Structure formats: C-alpha cells, structure tokens
Length: 134
Image 1 (cartoon, rainbow, N blue to C red):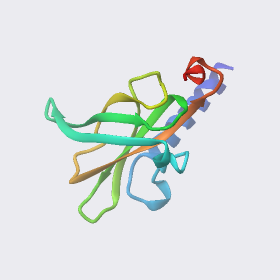
Image 2: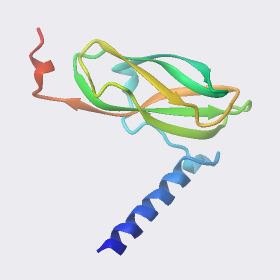
Image 3: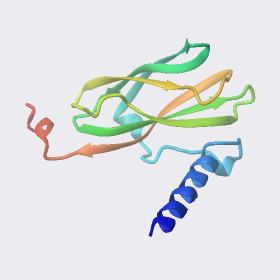
C-alpha cells in the first residue's frame, strides 16, 4: 500500500513538473474555467523581493457570487511572446464575498521581459452565508 502511494505521488510530481516547464505549446497551462474574465478583474504589478521578481496585487470578485479556493496562473513571457515558464499559486483569502477584493503575492516563475496573470481556477460557493447578503 505504501509503495502504491509513493508511486502515485512520484507520478503526480513528474506530471506537474512537465506541465509547468518548457515553452512547448502542448504543455502550456490555460485557465480551467474559461470566461473567468466576466467574474473577476486583476490589478497587479511586478515587484522585487530579495532580488527576485514577485507578482503582487489584487483580485476583484466583480460577481454576485461568493468564491473560494481561487488559484492564479502566472506566465513568464519572452520577447517573442512565448510562454517560457508558468506558476500556479493561491490567492491569500480562503474565500471572497461578492463584489470584494483579495490580495495576492506570488513568486514569478522566472525572470522575464513580461508577465501575464490569469485566474486559473475557483470554486463558486452556494448555500453559504454570502448567499444571504442583501
């Protein structure tokens, strides 16, 4: 049983490493929930912390829905416009009320000339305390 768990964990780690490295178009991650732009807005900038690039800013939930477990996708883009590295990270808030904002700070996947930030995934909350807001 332990060996099976170890094999599954190693396979998952290998798949994760393949999915986030290299510029090959078949390996580039895309948001899991297309149309996220209708619900969310991003305001971010690149900063330097300890000599390394960091993408920091706010995610705005412009929707009437409460959401949780929001992940962001940061792409490092080369001068030709190709994605060279990617990183998926969590928004700091565990959940977001409708029409609210949450701060995020993610280490950039690699030094790059340009970055792109997108909502990678989120969970819409139903039946929670936010659904009873006026």
